[in-house]
Length: 174
Picture 1 (spheres, rainbow, N blue to C red):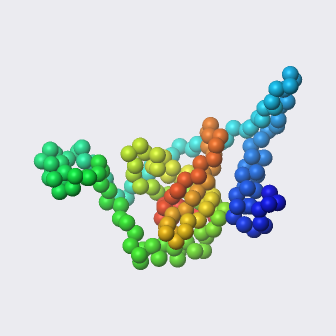
Picture 2 (picture 1 turned 120 degrees about the horizontal axis):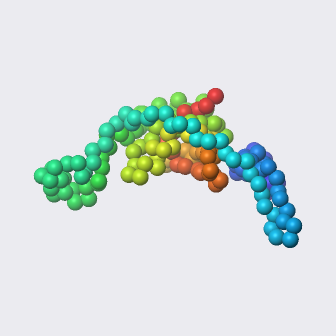
Picture 3 (picture 1 turned 60 degrees about the vertical axis):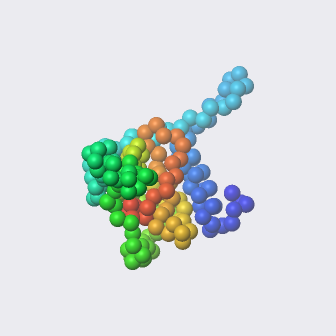
């Protein structure tokens, strides 16, 4: 830990990981026959029942279209996606307003809750809605509207989950 400069984000992340480890560790059980020691951890809290979340945009599935409409789409664009969403892309003005509104609370270590997500085929992003965590890392100006969030462990999870989330999908927890 001393190799990392004081006050740096890397040092904060290392100290956070160590604090999480120490909080979960119950003890270390030595083996009587000289085998490796076993670390015993507390179970993570169970996941609360997810709140009902409905996206505020619609998704149009390609396979739900009629054959004529599918043929027209494929003729116009051979790379037609399997689904189209009406989730609006942020304009430059919207992005500037979002970053200005988040300037008061957006920092590494801030506790946040995921409040929305884009729809995905496997549903992995939608399952994150309602999860809590901390801002793990801020992105460069290229992805200024995204952050990395280290999710709190729940249930039987043992390894940390750091997810890449849009800034409009997170809200600070006071």
